[in-house]
Amino acid sequence: MPGGPFGRYGSDVADSDPAAPGDDLDVEVLYREHAAALYAWACLRLEPRMRIVATPEDLTQEIWLRATRLWSTRDDQSGPPRAWLFTIAKHVLYEVQRASRGRDGLPVGGTTKLLAMEQVPVEVTSLTQRLSRDDALRAFLDRAAALDEEERSLLIHVGIEAMPQADVAVRMGLSYEALAKRWQRLRDRVRAWPTAQGLLGV
Image 1 (tube, rainbow, N blue to C red):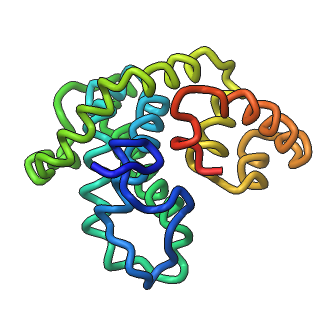
Image 2: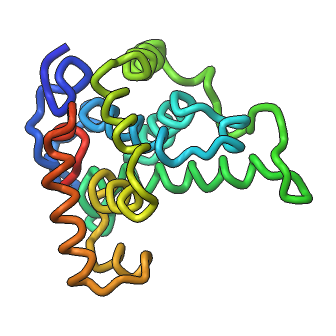
Image 3: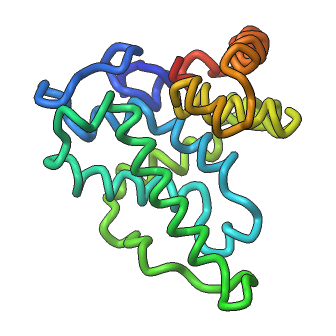
């Protein structure tokens, strides 16, 4: 497979968020370009109790399924393609979070019906399986796991999801200036990590 933001797991499109709604961007190309970032995000966002319902591979594949179904609905209000993908990802994560809790707030077993795995093609399943075995991506995730809670939130929301820093500042209860300085320091460190250039959206 051609190179891209994650080498052999990416596509042959440019590293930058490639197209606005209405351009000739294919959902398959978009997904493959950001599959590694989506998988890393899933690993970082799925809490242990949520993994009873869905693994990072499941979550990443479900995002592909939703993206293909919703692709025709993208318009000028949808934002950049990467942001659009992560909006879908957050909705799926929320559904998994809800499904992981029983009536008393305790985890429940089984697989949530939102994960229609039989509809995911073998190529997508193979892609997520390869990502799960990639040593460089594992090294990135190990370093991310060692961050403190604030730094990990910055990495997830600003670095991977590419949320506007002003929005993240409100979410984290920081001033914009404080958040921008902390992110700049963290970004300078993270850029030296394995695969970081392909995973970060900023």
